[in-house]
Image (cartoon, rainbow, N blue to C red; front, side, top):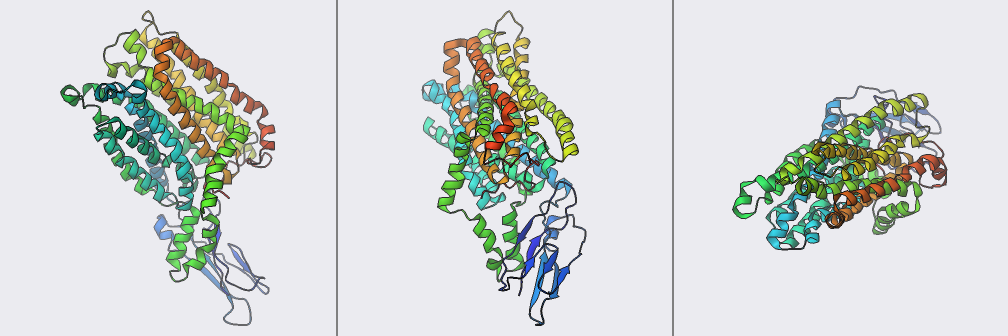
Length: 564
């Protein structure tokens, strides 16, 4: 009788927990039970104390196997074997974890950069192909629609095939479809390739939380997600500056109006360089690692060792539809907590993408700055500073309030405490919008109008980052992938729709009243975090998706977001 249990030894720090993946029990003896450290039968209890230090490299860890073979009956052939395979993922060296986080943050930067750099192409597209302005605006909007639909598709792929394969394949195709965008000869080719670029570029948005959860502990994952969100928004703010500069100043613009193509050539070069860094990211999905190791250690009978894990994580067509496609949207529209938080953060991100199409207009039209590249500098540079200020505020909040709660209670006694930065952002965002709207005058110094974008950038970062942290913390681990999919879907959809409405709205209402409308909208939806703050505990009790009671422990350590 032979049974085996795969797990890693005791974690080296408080951020890691034991993950045991049992192999198939081929015994007919029902009185045998297997524990990571013990093997118990009717006659004996065998305990192993093998504790050897982990090697620094994850690859070497896969080779370390500890076996204890014990006689459990009078027959010499009746034995129980307990096999220990250290988990290499959580035991990665510190430099490797930092490199993984840095690589994913660079990926986030180029995703944000590519999403907004083409906002400077509206004029050239209209001139070259003689299309109506809404169709020219679609080049940014359709990229964001690709983000929306890509999240619903790649969520299940990452669970069925692990993290590394979808990430590397998706980013490769993200680069490939930028090439037809740069070489497009008509508007149809441009729009189709932009959609596919956004579709495949959505992979990191739905896999990054799981990767950080697999590699890092709960507390470190929080910092990594903050850096990822900051990189995404900073890249989005710098995109319009780079786009305007390339369109206006490139020599090809003077020759044949083809300077706009260098916006895509630039992102292709940057994307390829960043793509090379993702190969430092190993496969981190626990059940995927288990199957790979079982196949390596038992090449002849690995099917028997992995069939249970395969059964648990098999993605049938019915399961794909019921769990992965339907559940995010059922949760979004039936769970008040998820709906309120996602709606508010979606509005904030939509307003950010409105600014990429419209906030250079006051400097071009009202203040009569003649060059688009210089007109894009004041609003977007100050908005980038605002995002960095929001990151600083969030960092201080984590170091003080969150750390204090975990040290005192070991968990978040009241998860709604995470919404304090969101409440601050709900004040900063409309304040910045009203400030920008009513300083749009030649009698006002340009710096007074540009400074308002600091409030806008900080407000967007605080709202989007901490509302996402709150929702991912309170929901059960098996529902977190659905929560993340619903959040990214609605945010991207709002950003895509608002982008299409931006230019026509500003042409009819002008800068002051058009910006004020969005200020009133953000002020009105600022009630969402207030409601969650006041009635969050009551709403959590009524939700079947939320962790029972107040037992919010900071989330699943491995962060795989595995659906059941």
